[in-house]
Length: 392
Figure 1 (cartoon, rainbow, N blue to C red):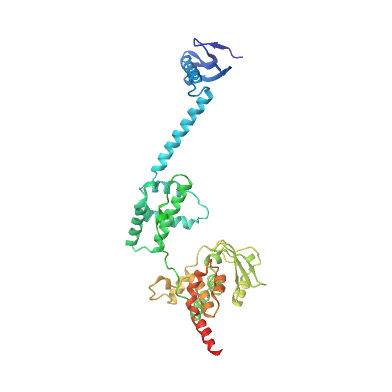
Figure 2 (cartoon, one colour):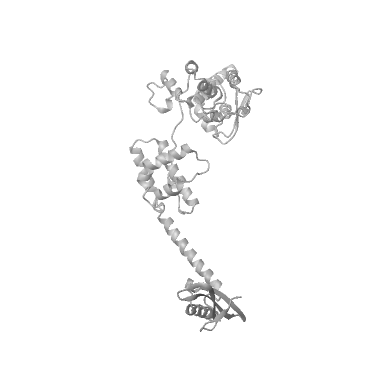
């Protein structure tokens, strides 16, 4: 059992460590005793090697007694320690807040935003965002603190990109990146102000495609692909052309979603966020039967490694160029690309008199406004409907 010694200061005592030294003397452990609200209390202070001495212990005891007498300050050592810890936390939070207040866009983007795997963001999107940041955003607002970036700075970025003839779509993409960075900064409490992009009116680019293939052109395309022995690319094109599938929907398609009996294809988690059915033509059914491997969950199309296809083969554009489909085309919306096949599917439906609501359902559009771009193709059907009035 430890032996306690009284110091020369009333209420202060100590015990000595059996082996440890503090200079030439043994290390001493100090405690204080005092009366509080009629009860005798004892609180531990610490070792002399931690800076405690009889004098300091006496001063601490005097401070607690003075607080009890005047009603100002902490009357227990534990309360005093808690107050000191709280003061340290407050000071640290204030310092961190000041640091966050001064963090620049580049420091946040490079140090936090780009290094975090944000939910739902593909590797391709991350590469595109980093490219926009490096080429454009960094130069204009990179050195500025987040709290100092305003609408005028965003307009400067837009003007800079416009002068370099960047497309409206690219400019909007850059602004979307900035918006996401500020949203993430708010989420991580590095920014608490108003997102400057909220005050910017974005102009929606008209990306609607005008060009669609004639049946003769579509036949030429499929025939050349077959002659080139690019069977997989041929089949992908046929699926898009006859069923209106997007490239991504074709890449993800698995055999358990192909119902030969009902002649349907279930498309899961499409661009609109919903599932939808596509319906086989006899030609599509025949090609799927020819490809069927006997496995119910395998991918319908795979790359050379047996994994999911990531992009349409370059042979597609080589074939388009070989057929001169894009010769003398100035407006990029008139260029034939893989998505033109889906556009052709919808255009043929409307030309054949299919109503827009049905076309909307088959394409999986989220709103009828997206489908109305095909409305002019149904003029002959409308004209014929009006002509029939004369027969009444």
